[in-house]
Structures are given as C-alpha cells and as structure tokens.
Image 1 (cartoon, rainbow, N blue to C red):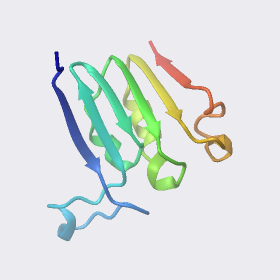
Image 2: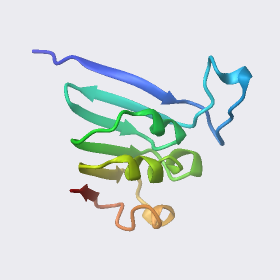
Image 3: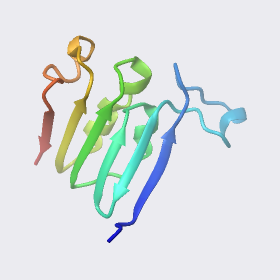
Length: 115
C-alpha cells in the first residue's frame, strides 16, 4: 500500500540568499527541500529556506548533501524554533571535517533533543 507523501521546495537558490521584489515570485532562499510522509519529515539540506518549515514537535531528519554555507546556514534558526522533539542531522559524506561546528560527529548521526 502506497503512503501519501508531499514534497516542498523551501529554497532552491545556490551560493547566497537574494531577497528583492524581483524574486518574490520565484524565491531567493538557499537549498532546502522537505519530504513529508504522514507526520514524518525529512529535509534535504539546511539552507535559508528551512526557516519556512512549520514548527514540529516530532522527530525531524536533516540530510546534508555537502557542507557549503548555502546548505547549512538555515540550521541555527531551525534548531532554535524547535520547542520539543528531536532533530537528527546526518550526511553520507566521507569527510566530516567541514561540518565540525554544526555536527562534530557527522559521520555518525548527531541527534539533538529538545524537551
């Protein structure tokens, strides 16, 4: 049986966010894609678009494609908005060096719980 899922593109811009009247229709936020299965959410990348995701009390998963600033800059705001639940930040990259400020043990999974 197929479960319904929804995909939202919260940000698709590369390099840096760009906010101006000319970008209101197409958006100016950096990479963040939400995949929702019922009440479960997985985010691909943590760019500035992550700020638009609704606050959740559940367990959210953020998978980082790589560690460029435009893919992680939205994580601090996202994490501070979370009042309950947990956030798992993970990556499949072999060299976790660049993420040491966000997830020092990123080769393993970093779990942040908020009570």
